[in-house]
Length: 284
Image 1 (tube, rainbow, N blue to C red):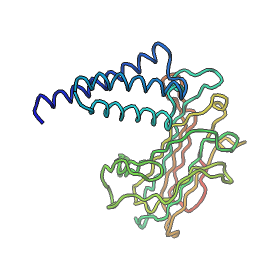
Image 2 (cartoon, rainbow, N blue to C red; image 1 turned 120 degrees about the vertical axis):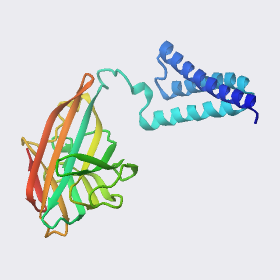
Image 3 (tube, rainbow, N blue to C red; image 1 turned 180 degrees about the vertical axis):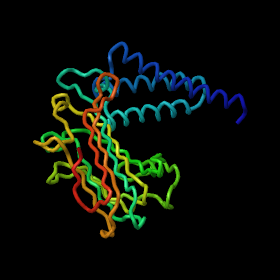
Image 4 (cartoon, rainbow, N blue to C red; image 1 turned 90 degrees about the vertical axis):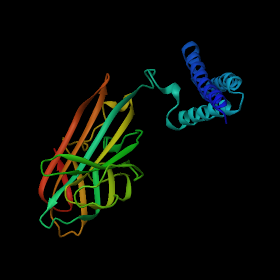
């Protein structure tokens, strides 16, 4: 392919995608579309025809049409799977949603034996309404980190809540392999609903940081809490093997609420314990 031909193909693809974008913006500004699946389809179809047509005339090939098709299909799939665009922005009072940020950490600080702990089962307090898991949307992320003796934090692995690894930053301390998540979920318990994880192994100095962007309907927003019903505190649970190892551990859990453009902490609970055993730990 000669240089002139390559330039035409590139220009055609760029113009096609730019035109598709401008048509989408024009529909949104003029008609406030899309506002349904039908208008989403019409908007993308018109944008695809105009963008592909103009780009095709410039490139004299099918590459412009292919490019806008990929973008249009991606937008359609993303809109349906991750939240339709007509629900984004200022919602009506009866459908308004409130955003929260949930964060929880467990740290295995160390032990006298300085051995790894295995089959680590952790149960964090879960956002709830009257001890029932709230009707909330969830997309967990998880980070494995290592904490040195000066309490400096070093990220090791960033992953999805179910264990899909996004990025490995590096290993610290005694770790030489990736963390394995055996199970994860939300379950009821005697201490209210809990977000639970089971990991294959944690080394001294390592910790787990779990984060979740939560969207709640406005009628539930003022009732969502990390506390147990009827109490002013909450609890977390941890177990491991071998069970004869007593460890130094810490928990930290926080719920933040988006007020305006800022997330403001509304509940924070923590607990540190120097000679921990398998047990429930009250967080204050």
